[in-house]
Amino acid sequence: MVPIKLVLAVQEEEYIDPFLRYVHASEFDRRLAVTAFSRREALAQYVAESGGDIDVILGDPAYLEAIDTLKWQGLCCVELGEGGVSQEPGSLRVEKYQPLHQLLSSVVELVRGGPGKQMRSDGQPLVIGVYSTVGGCGKTTVALHLARQLATEGGKVFYLNLETIGSELPFAGQSSREGQSGFARLLYDLKAADDRRETPRFPISAYAYRHPVLQGDTLAPPDNLNELLEMERKDTAELMDYIAGSGLYDTVIVDMDSFPDGRTEAVLERADRIVWIVADDWGVMRKTGGWLTHLERTRPDFYRSLLGKTRFALNRYTGKRSADLPRPDLKLQATLSYIPAWNQGSRQGDLLHSPLFQRDIIRLCHELHGEGPVPLAREG
Image 1 (cartoon, rainbow, N blue to C red):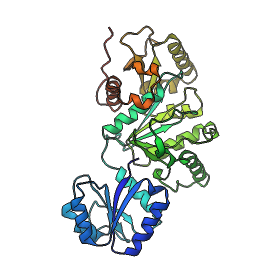
Image 2 (image 1 turned 30 degrees about the vertical axis):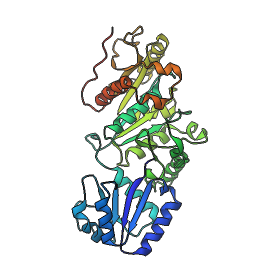
Image 3 (image 1 turned 60 degrees about the horizontal axis):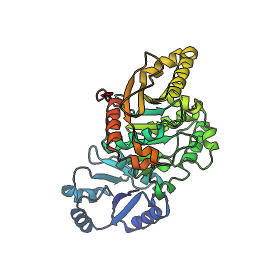
């Protein structure tokens, strides 16, 4: 994971030492690369010679003023305040004397809160669930590509994997170690807060980590599968609301199990868009039709709501179709090209560079965000 390059600029050297010691001994050691200054002249020289290779400057107001003419577009400057209000209208500010975990969590969230894709009109992020009635249709591959593409386009993306046995993220390496117990701990803290009828104490940055390939945030999977198996509909809804309500993301991608348990149904109900993956296979189409028919008969209101936000996507498309969607009122909104490398056992990370698949994912991303219809490939 690429750490946030933070410059600390304060007058008191006795503030710098415990700050640096806490960073190096905490979860922020991998998130932040800190350079500290107590002299304004040295700070100004460092900023001038940095070549723009700084993400955030956290400092006393006088120090931020001293480098005002050296700032560049995209540089995040956060004022360390001591009560009262900021002297600069619209400036970013955190309290200087507070628990360092809270201070650093706030700074990380401010840095990640840069411009991205447009949110919904109500200011909430777009929650996109990726679903398939049958396993093995490439659901996780599609979810990962959606997350990566939206992040590449400048979006602030969170990838949430709710599969009981999820696929390994591509090229996670050691970066996933940072958030090793993030998922389990977050579930526990959300339940504890709900029991106390309080809001959660910590921000999402206390549990999530930034994945270097996806270029977005995610949670390391729990070691114990019971953490997922014991999740109920209410737990899942609260988890999605907590992530979506953080204010850090404009898109949340949720990867679901194919089995319609409480977790899956909570996502189908809560999501703003559903990407429903199908395959050119009679069995897949039959099972998809059977599940939709059951929903229409037993939960007609939910069925109508689900169809209204669902985009059916045919994965592994070769240019011709032999199996149609199971009902005449259902239409395909996207096709995702067949990549021969899949049959050669390629890892998911290798597919991130497939030009054909990326082209199709771009079209799907634009359609999901209301940027125009998806032009389907012409059958030969």
